[in-house]
Amino acid sequence: MGRGDLSDAEWARLKQHLPWNVGRGGRWKSHHKVINGILFRQRTGIPWRDLPSRFGKWKTVYDRHRRWSADGIWDRLLRAVQADADAEGRIDWTMVGVDSTSCRAHQHAAGARERPPRVPGRRGRPAQHRDDEALGRSRGGLTSKIRLASDGRRRPLDIVITPGQWGDAPQLIPVLERIRVPCPGGGRPRTRPDHVSGDKAYTSRRNQRYLRRGQIKHTTPERQDQRANRRRRWSAGGRPTGFDQAMYKRRNEVERTINARATHGESPVRHGVRGSRLLQLLCWPHYLFHTVPPQVKAAVAPA
Figure 1 (cartoon, rainbow, N blue to C red):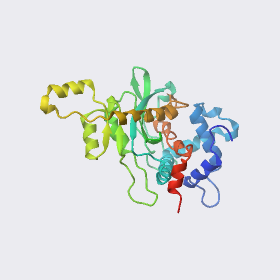
Figure 2: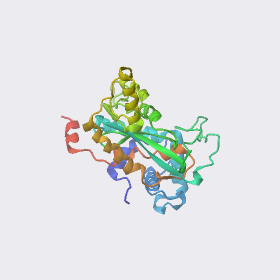
Figure 3: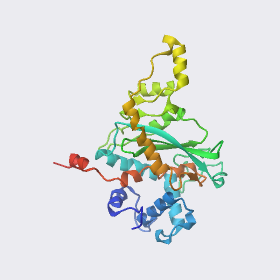
Figure 4: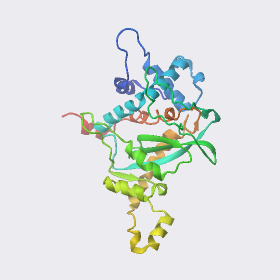
């Protein structure tokens, strides 16, 4: 087993959620080896054709990643491992941080076809497809922006990718609305964290109304211009937003999540033309590569 490959315990946790062949004549082959190749390429950022031979043919690894991205299998896999982690108490809902990071795009990432890519064997659009392919222009050239929400244990709950010139404040609500952790026993998925933190870029009246309407506690510092505008209006400016300095110190958790996953390998420089494939593998490995704490094992162990 190479560095970064799935161990036997991690593979046993993962394989039950993967598609398998039905009947004679298999469509899929060696999921374990192919997924290790996909993770290797995501971690190192090398071209697909330069994959080591121990992962099999590079074309097989690339096609599987492309098909599963279009079919939404990576998204379903994320929901499945999140449901298992939530049932074991490994998701910390007491603090969910929202942050973003810029991703430079290589010149080869431009030039995608205007028509959406086909899903093999289907007529629908690929999962999470964007007409602009989340590619925008800013002062640094072609860029994309990776926005994520992570729990208190530095595990991403969901990720949204947008063009690089889009602001942060309007994207807080789309990021939070994509959080859906299913319940293993059935019922409605959990979508609401106990507390949300964000930096000054996410401070806006629209975001505050959304969080208050959902009865979500939040900690976001007030910008200097907003504070001056509120004071200038006297009583019509309303009350200042609540700010808990102790809770805001936990914002380092989401920043460490970005540093651990979104600033290594393929993520800092985007080469692919399809934006949806950039974020497919940034979430679920966190739920496999982290062991269950002993106190959690004791709490969920059957009597």
